[in-house]
Image 1: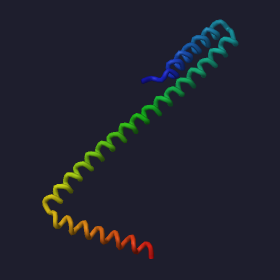
Image 2 (image 1 turned 90 degrees about the vertical axis):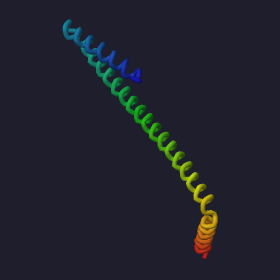
Image 3 (image 1 turned 30 degrees about the vertical axis):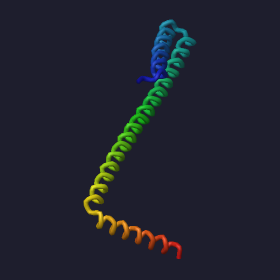
Image 4 (image 1 turned 60 degrees about the horizontal axis):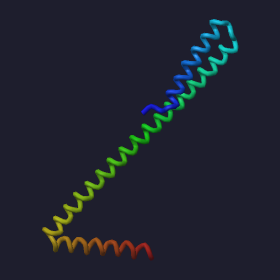
Length: 115
């Protein structure tokens, strides 16, 4: 999507060039100077519009990347949950022993930081 500042900037730029050329042809320094000023305003507005477009494009790209990362993370979490559930169902005693060891280790870590 093109920003409206780019369109109006291009129009001012073109209008300024025409006014400056007409001023040059007729020998009117006033019209020539006004045309150059209008041309410069058009260039500045066009550059401003280009910057807005670039920021908008960067924001859309960042949003798309974040959305993709969120979806991939959700898929990974669901896949990991299914795998853990499968392992617990297949090896309940080993899972209970591992959970107990993890709990004991966490208890030691929490107790060690209080001393």
